[in-house]
Amino acid sequence: MHGHSFIVTTSWDDGHPADLRLVELLSKHHIAATFYVPCRNCEGRDVMDMRDVRSIAKVFEIGAHTIDHVDLTKVSSIEAKHQIESGKARLEDALGTPVLGFCYPRGGHTRSIRNLTQKAGFLYARTTANLHLNAGSNRFALPTTLQFFPHSRSTYLRNFISGGAYRTRVVPFFSAVAVERIGDRVKRLADFCVAQGTYFHLWGHSWEIEENGLWGELEAALCYISSIAHEQATNLEVTRRLISDS
Figure (spheres, rainbow, N blue to C red):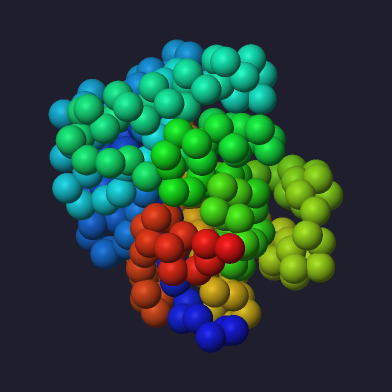
């Protein structure tokens, strides 16, 4: 394992009120997590009030997700800067603590957006790049292993083709599409990460889990990965431990 223990990290985007149910499951199975919370959601979905965010922050990492959950690649650089910086400031005002992690809404980022994120004072930023078994080398392009959503095999294929890094992602890709159920995909990739990777990064949206009736399957998956994990870590802790400053 290249000198590293196998670490499990999870992250959950959009700050939907159903995150509170996620908190219960994650706490029950002793799994570390990061919650990325916008101030509002331009797509019309509910966002938790700050009282609930403060309660989650007592146990888990809170990261920023812009003010309005906008795709930063589709707005001006001035608006992107405002969304990144003000989203951070509002969360910090509400929590009374520094917010060091950021997640790009819809995974959209460019070099200039990554630079804006770094200049805003974040320590790292998470993407939606998938099928990765390690944290990579760029603190502002933290990849993931698997989204907890029942994507079709054709969606996985399109994502694999567009995501590059084929040599390291090809076996995780075939491992994921070999089974149909998302819970089985979690187990297969977690097992593969234990053997080959430095970390397993599961992410998702509580509102999708709610809409698709996946709570039971998620709990079974969390129970399994908790049983095989060497260590648990938030996204911030993973970044500090696995990605050098160079």
